[in-house]
Amino acid sequence: MENTFEPKIVAYVCNWCTYAGADLTGTSRIKYAANVRIVRFPCTGRIDYNLLLKALALGADGIIVSGCHPNDCHYTSGNFHARRRWIVFKQMMEYMGYDMRRVKFSWVSAAEGAKWADIVNTTVREIRELGPAQRIQNEEFRMMNSEG
Image 1 (cartoon, one colour):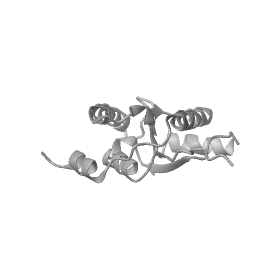
Image 2: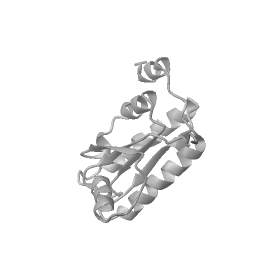
Image 3: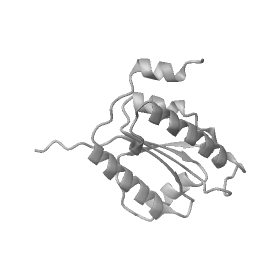
Image 4: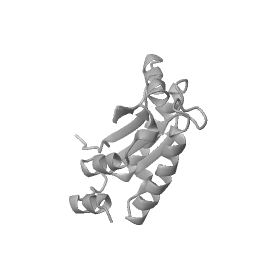
């Protein structure tokens, strides 16, 4: 029997849009990969990107961050806050040499169940092709989280 790599992906999603879109995917019986574990937040603007680092340190092969479309946030500007933080996080990770093809940022509304399935399937396929992620070591995690 062939040993195939199945990636572990953590998705940090907005309660109001992406989580509802993922729910619509299921209720519409749209098939998508089961490799994703969803962590629901009130808003993507509340996601501390240290959680993403921790997920990578604990064995996640990929990450999806997804929330409401711009100008459609239930908390007015939370998704804009998330986008600004995303840009800084991405630059930091690229500087540290992390392969950012493993981390996706997207907008999915509550009515876009098919889009959620496509994002999940595409992410799983791409990460499967990349193979297992190099784990962030404890020293690197502490260094990225240190003050100063």
